[in-house]
Image (tube, rainbow, N blue to C red; front, side, top):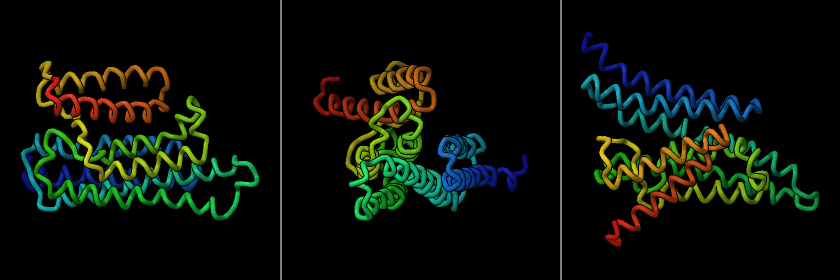
Length: 242
């Protein structure tokens, strides 16, 4: 394949990630939160494939890393924020009449911490050389999958219809993006049963099981499990238990 064509393939895939993020935002504005969340999943697939294609084709681009971060802000920052914002409007309408005040309604704008702190998290990642095997803070795609599928998960977890609970999760996960918590990278370098890979296998097995039980509503549970396993793994490693 011509080198001139090859070097544009990863960036083209990155742009498809961004476009899917835009489709997600449009779906949210049209009130179709399920499709909006599915577009985020497709964005995550493209986000995985752009780096993979760059490695397979052995091409690099001076703008590739920056373009990837800009796309991620849209797909994993703005898009899930629009889903959770629209869902909070639904939850607000279910509050007792006495709580449906303008002041309480304005609280939902706190969810826009998500794209703001996603941008901070991505900027840090671009200049940090220590995040090869682990991430510092919640990865933006994981955060997007958690928030984006809260409406779907609410069919199985009734508290996710609660305005205050949803707002709490949205703000908490926004701050997890820039937290010092070590999070496992799910990229396998090999498939040996090393202690890090065992933690990854646990996340995968539990995730697949939850998906069969709860379908699309499983994503928030999977990401929450990913958070707990990461904290548990790094705590035991720090204490030299494993």
